[in-house]
Image: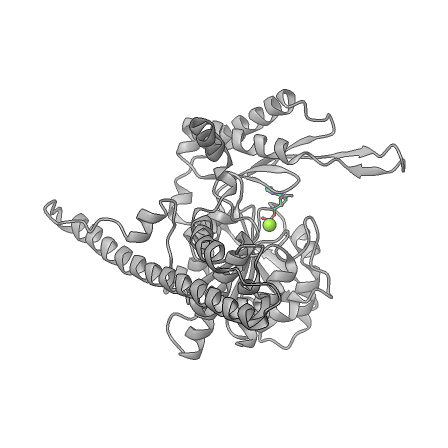
Length: 447
Ligand code: IMP
Ligand code: MG
């Protein structure tokens, strides 16, 4: 039984976020032990809610302190490593691990402190989490508290006029700015918010997996946004702070105007490629994509995927998309939906096979399940975001603590592609374009 449990846990770990799961476990105790009151007694109900609220808040306050401790620890450990590298002094003593790393081994890096207690009380005042008696604090409750805390952090930096203010906001495309496979039409409520960011001198990068080597597709899909930028009274140098990083980290385009013409212009790779990306050899890139393509063909056969499912090879990516079939009832051509399990089996096998393939170890790649398709892209959103941090200000690159990436795909590596952006900046994990708008409103309104 225990080994079966372990196998299942292992196989599902790609869907779990270790930190959120751990917080959920901590909040379960006060929920189980204290979120009970006697029916019909309003006073008792109120006392119970207050008790549960203060216990949840206390837990978030403790986690806030653990994060602050981890940040301080990581800074000291980095200094130690630099000292060790510089002096070759092996007698120097490392500091061990932060307590949070011991409690949550999969934890990543925090670039800023997070006011979690305040964020919890804010979310609770709107969503009445502590009044619930049957439904414990959920994954989504915690995801929202973490997002709110990140927003509060940036609002505070701005109010303090600190040097750690937000300088760049990057956005995923599908599901974050528009529905899956959609585009930004001129009524999209995200447009005025993005204009406000630009006006506040915050650079914007749309960092999407959708990879095309020419601007037209992006101009079509982002038409509502670029038209609004064109028609706005923003000074041109601020309009230029709008870019698209396509194919994760493969193609960079920047907004331009030329008379009545406007849109995106391609930027030469020499101007923005990170040094480590310049070391990748073309033959390794081709070998990796060939290998991934073969693996997809093999999986299509093994999993008995429908003939309609199409394998698409691009210069910097290869993917399997569902294709279309005739609906027997309506007689119309409809999109063929692959099952969730099929998509997961494909993405995990692809990732796993590539990890053991030598040329893939010499470059970087990202495999992810886009909800209806699976892709293997060269590069990753961490590189896309980092390249923009340097491109916008080469002499004083934007720091991860001054960067916010908004995306919907943060499940652990191997099945989601926004996950890697966590290596390069702070993040907001949203679940719909509406949530993106809600958070941005709070960020720009400075509530
Ligand atoms: P994102 O959410 O903006 O990162 O876009 C992800 C979606 O872009 C995928 O689910 C695909 O449907 C689509 N897409 C189009 N071209 C590519 C490509 O070259 N690589 C990966 N995804 C692509
Ligand atoms: Mg997305």
